[in-house]
Amino acid sequence: MVRQQRLDPEVEVLWEDFHAEVNVPSEQLRQWLLTRGSGVEAFGPDPDLNLPEPGRQILAVLRKRKVDLTPEDIEVMRDAVERIRSLTAARPARGTADDEWRHSLLDLGHDILIER
Image 1 (cartoon, rainbow, N blue to C red):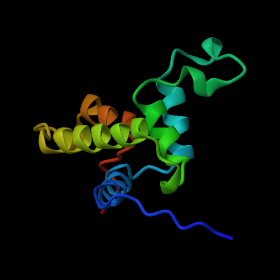
Image 2: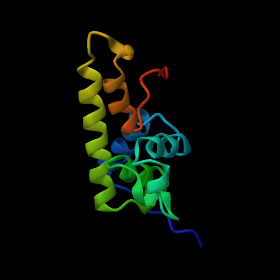
Image 3: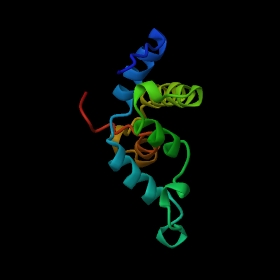
């Protein structure tokens, strides 16, 4: 028997917002974060442990089903949405040519070059 679990409507909206703002697929985000880490020689047998924050937390949420979210996951989602929206609202004069700005967004799983 399948048990249907209902989520708080606020969490439903946050889930949709999170997946709209975090527009990079999880494997692509993982690869990006690996390049932002300390370097190949610093990685141990489980490279996910060395991924930079908050990208590692965002990646963990991307790998979950909505019904498996914890309160910590919900906070990660809320923070990611707020940070991405804040960064996109503060678009620098150079726009996508500003590597530091674009990389800050990529660290959060948002690629400004992906059309919505």
